[in-house]
Image (cartoon, rainbow, N blue to C red; front, side, top):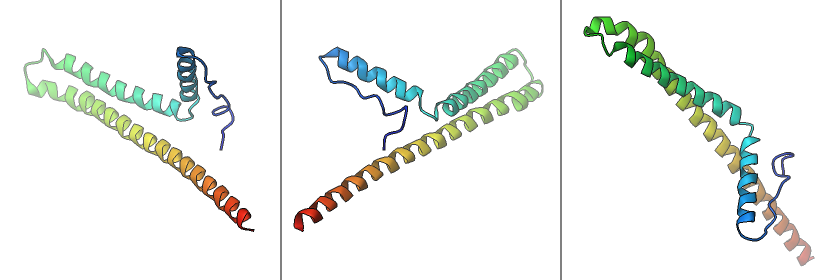
Length: 127
């Protein structure tokens, strides 16, 4: 089933690299129009922010010789940063799984539609 704004552009098969460039451009536009893109960008930003928090903590505790003085930085920054990284990675995986499931359902729907059309044609031919 074509989606308006997503599948309405089809590449014209032409000569050589122009057709490849056009197919890449169309794939880029389809990826840009993907409804899951803002969520994925947010989750990547969440993971990068967590990595930045961990890096900030590492730079803060480098010159501190006592573990007791390092502990507040580790608890507040590194654990929070690790939680952000893990949350971003987990939710990105869930988002990717949902997207894959939607694509698989659409492909299955196409297969079932094709099978129904074939069965209909066979039944018409027998009559």
